[in-house]
Length: 112
Length: 114
Image (cartoon, rainbow over all chains, first blue to last red; front, side, top):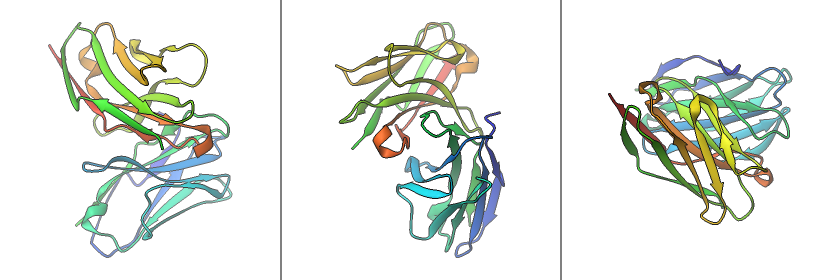
């Protein structure tokens, strides 16, 4: 158990819909990263938050957004969903100044 | 820009044989390097990491990797494969000046034959 909790584990939704994925980082970790894993793109960095503020952005679509709350949990919002958004979404957390990231179990999103 | 290349999308070894998974990186500044393992329907688990210091890094489950700057490589090895090592392995690079985000290779699936 990495200490990073992601909910839900599985999500099935229709095209055009909006979903929210939730991540609770390890106790004490200020940094949260979101990654997308798909068969065609592999593991792609989406976005990072550090202590409530956006720190870095990767290949994140405009239809996607994220935030980190004062209690440090984070949410990834995916809207106007398309079939191609079906993927495994991972959250990872790390301590500030430490490079090691711990991953959650992921949320498997299926868009039908 | 950073990038990671993992040679071989699939590697098959016999139980008890040497495991060698190859990783080459590209980075204009000294990188931090990682190997993660992913078992079916699981998240990624850190096997080992190189940041600074000793270039031979030992990790969990008997794995080790050597950072070779001249070859820009960080290959993962294990002297004797176990059936339980069957999984997908990802090499990743990060840098302090890019918020430590991980850039992953495409992964290598390790198959262990009895």
